[in-house]
Image (cartoon, rainbow, N blue to C red; front, side, top):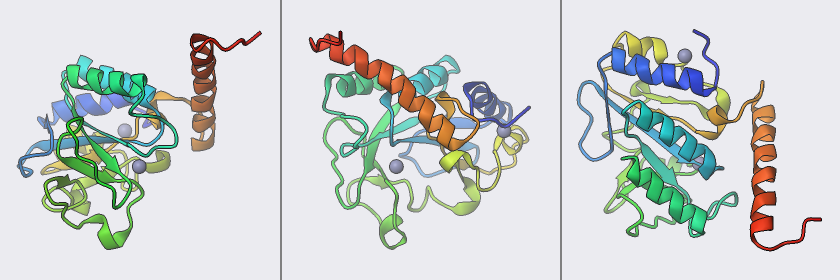
Length: 213
Ligand SMILES: [Zn+2]
Ligand SMILES: [Zn+2]
């Protein structure tokens, strides 16, 4: 099994967790043995989020999608953004806020779950009134946390330990963009995301009545 950042290996990670008898759960109850809190901070692409959400649903898994209200890359208030939230809900996923500190917006689009975008140490693990902070106790503890930041698992890809039941419980952060779009490096993966986005933008321009001749 090669630990590449693509949807084939992503599905293998999900199946490894099932084999290790883990159960996928959403933030609310404190962690108990065998829980996996799989969360997605959506920094760049709602399309990638939806692709991953569909794949998880095919595997019978519900996870937590944290969406930004202040992204420079997508607009949650647009028709696309509204449709994305509706589809995530329809697939059974939880939807929380990926917030830019200190702006927590917990309106009725979101479950009361917050992850900070690019968090700083001084506030990262502080409790947030009325919401779960995924970086705070009891959900956040470095030995039971794995993140795929910039296509690099700091403590290694978790699939082997998941399959063997090696974690008591685990929180995993997965960024859909770096699995859905392909490239040999992070830079190439981002460029392939931008190429896909260009095609989408041209369709949007045509739909908006812009003469592209
Ligand atoms: Zn792996
Ligand atoms: Zn982020």
